[in-house]
Image (cartoon, rainbow, N blue to C red; front, side):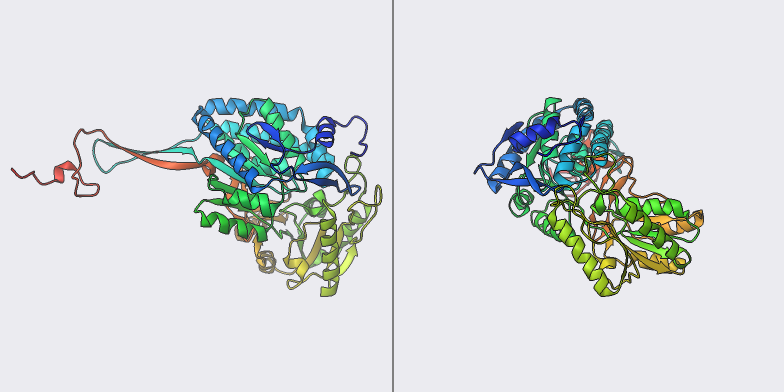
Length: 517
């Protein structure tokens, strides 16, 4: 492992660097059954820094079996007991926030100040879900018959299979696992092969804080083997997948073949609409935060800037100047604004999009090249600003998952909405305006799961998140999040002491003919 700035909390990183990432099954760290491993590469310098266990289908079977065994006892505990355990886990995680952040920064290159903040946010997610644990309610329904009680209760589903990407491993895991566990389920998570360390460390922290063995199990490995095995395992009762839409379609088909529900948060090509009355300083910061933060490697990246023609040129100029002034450096350094992309694959993908955009006829206003930093081997890319992007261009239509933004002009409100909705994706969007009427009309008409107004990339745990169209289906979070991880059971109780007519569905005994003498 490379040197980190003095004072950085490397407790977990030192252990991972020494021991590698193992599978976490039934409360124990174990090797893959066949002993297979692969290297994890630090995108800052392109060097491997630990080994990761490469799970097989047999390992997935072991994890699911452990989860099923644990779920019976965990689901039988009171909601108050489950909440108490989760609150203890939240307290423990807070003490490891920077240490967990270091793991993600070494794995995926994101700035430590963001990864550490995200780890702190995980504690909030745990507390939010713990608070919801005692709020799982059924209903008492009116009955058409006297002396009959009709009601519903909600019960855990069972084992939840969660597949997460590499860009925000623990936060994305907890968006599903926290409510699932609070509701009495157990979880098997398949990590990304590019970022497994933080989830493995989180599992250990949770176990030490009192989460029972088998309630959270961690499988690392390659998607075509471990991920597919998890989705197809008959012991898994629901699938939650976050990732690209191509793989998401395969997950949906595999889940449908087993008749189990799936919740999918997939890709995005999110528009940011900037109207001519917008506060430009606010809008520039929002555009930078929406697509350059995390190097654009977020599903909600606001990569389509749809801007009124009267302010278009000025906004392009301002954003290009800011892009050129951003500080490159080590993502562990608190002064760094631009770190590496998550891998050499992401770097190649970003460069390909730049070349395609220029071929399509867009004009490059800033960035778009590679920039050796550190050892010279890092996956560094200059955030790119394009103008003259048209709806037919690849840059307008396809997700880059990198810091590349394209500007498109509009004249009228209706044209702006049409451009925003001209996409197969619908995950998030942004609106920048000083006019409340404009904002509310846009909110109503934009086809996306989230609309931010005069802010961007600012989620709230109290609200749900998810997409429409090719961005997936189902939503996570919000006050009713635990309903997603329970099944509703109807209970009808006849306390009249009189039986039903056995030959009439729903008939009462009073309607039954007399028995023959």
